[in-house]
Image (cartoon, rainbow, N blue to C red; front, side, top):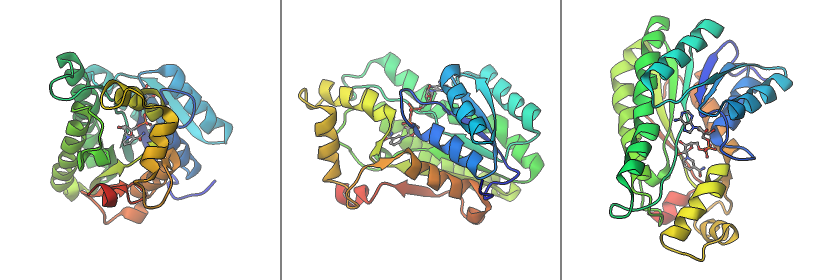
Length: 271
Ligand SMILES: NC(=O)c1ccc[n+]([C@@H]2O[C@H](COP(=O)([O-])OP(=O)(O)OC[C@H]3O[C@@H](n4cnc5c(N)ncnc54)[C@H](O)[C@@H]3O)[C@@H](O)[C@H]2O)c1
């Protein structure tokens, strides 16, 4: 086991995966643990979080599970209390939860709009509200918010609430970084690009079928995107988790308010 996060405690939201394989939160939780951190694996799906915690324990790491819906204040407060009660502190808050819903401004339902706003954006407000006072007491901490390059560009996918929340997350990250830097609390965003995770396999291709291309298939989608990535390959959850380890660790101790794009250069082509 490496030591870049030795002695640190990380709370990872959405630490499971919505399908088989590696989501970003699952990979981050496992890599944080490999680097020596103790992890609270939080997820609305307890089985998914348990799978991640068992993988960590199987490798000799330390992890606990907490079932929580991060859109609910009482559940977020209980999740944060569970983390401090299990491990005594919170050094890293990894705000990974994010969902998508189909449709542009005309087609998307109001319920879907509200659900995506609450899940992607309000959740980060709630977790920060509970965790920042603990980090202030500790005089330090690293908060990592999962955004997306869709916050910067039109991606050719019509899912209006998703990029809207991600753009708001970028600014939430910056203003929160500005305000709480005095307590040595760093707040940074990761903007993944085209990442092959269960979220894409399960939801994104369906949305393209319903939206701009009824004939879209998983294979066609992956090939279509690959042309737009200068590094010539899709990213995966480990590319994002590696960036997260850097932002969680003291190696990034002078970095805050950053939008860290991890996209193989895709935004250069979409510019
Ligand atoms: N996969 C990509 O290509 C990509 C690209 C850009 C950004 N991202 C971002 O990365 C993050 C993670 O993506 P992923 O692909 O790992 O997703 P994922 O769907 O595999 O994992 C997300 C986890 O969050 C959990 N979750 C959902 N709603 C929740 C809630 N209300 N409370 C608690 N847990 C909840 C799910 O159960 C799931 O285990 C998201 O914020 C996503 O927007 C992903």
